Length: 313
Image (spheres, rainbow, N blue to C red):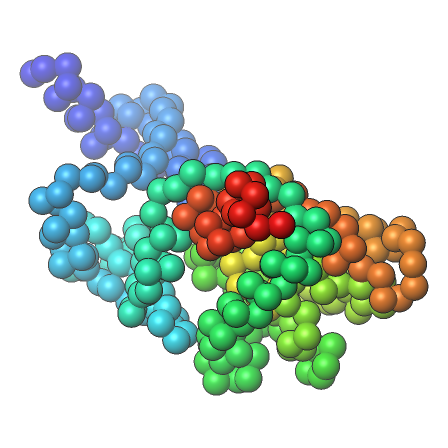
């Protein structure tokens, strides 16, 4: 028997006792157990998906137990099993998003691209970014479907109606079970606030009220989590131009979406507005914001690259 065979046999003899640890994305677990009556640890981590062309050509057709967990407009979310078994007892090990039909913009978004750090001054915002946002507003069908009650209503966890109303729904990047990776989304009903740029001093009471309600709703829905285990932030630039707040567990892995140059803490924005000079109309449109943009995005190709090269001014 080779050394490799001995190792493989040891794994098959592992007797599970309890889950010792798990990362907040559910991709890595540490199990405590015994092999031949002696304590042992088994660390399991999802392997990377192979990039072999022949394998990828059969990837979609090889999936088993594909189950829809939601859809909205062109977006479809599903769970699936990558193994050969058709057993209904097999736990899904893949979460899928099908964008159909997709556009050239989607293709660019999900393709590898370089990243640049840019500073958006109040002048650049008003002259270039605000008109850009206005053009992008026609791509919000799926958001308005949720707000208008036409889709995903079974996922709405909390709601307050009215011009200052909002709702809380699970972010579809969350599996709905792993508390360390909890990720909720707070969507406002009003349509006059597109991003943090529209926030003004007069919105402070509304933002404070919304923050309290977001925290109250989260801890009520998930009693195992306490208020100081949650953080609230917005993106700038956001993925879509309708104001929304991310509500996540403090231990959620801090990838690019929570990095400096992308995420702005809600409490920080409230404090900035409180200490800002001016009347109630003063706000985030009056400050410079520095953030990252992808080189394939229209923000870079149509605005910041021409500004850098002196084509625009």
